[in-house]
Length: 92
Image 1: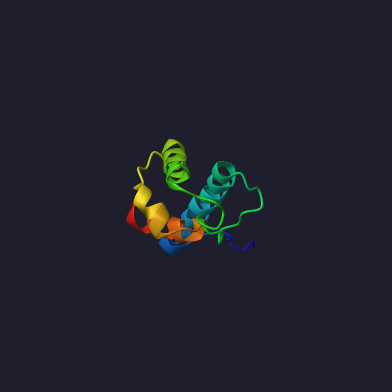
Image 2: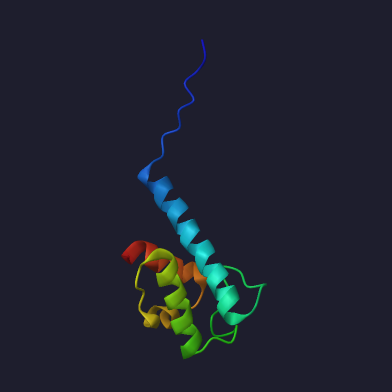
């Protein structure tokens, strides 16, 4: 007899996977928009040279990818991809 190896995904695990996907996407967008391939999830938007134009580019690119409209003000309030992803996954 073989053991049942069916994996059950809990809502928490699914949410964590989505958060990771959002975070990874935001890291990619931050890298491209800010022109810095070495940025990670904890890279600060301001320290990386971000300004109002790049904030609009980040939210626009995210909206194109996920079809979710994120206010530009959130980029300023949550300046790392990790922080921004947490807010997006929670509130959108």
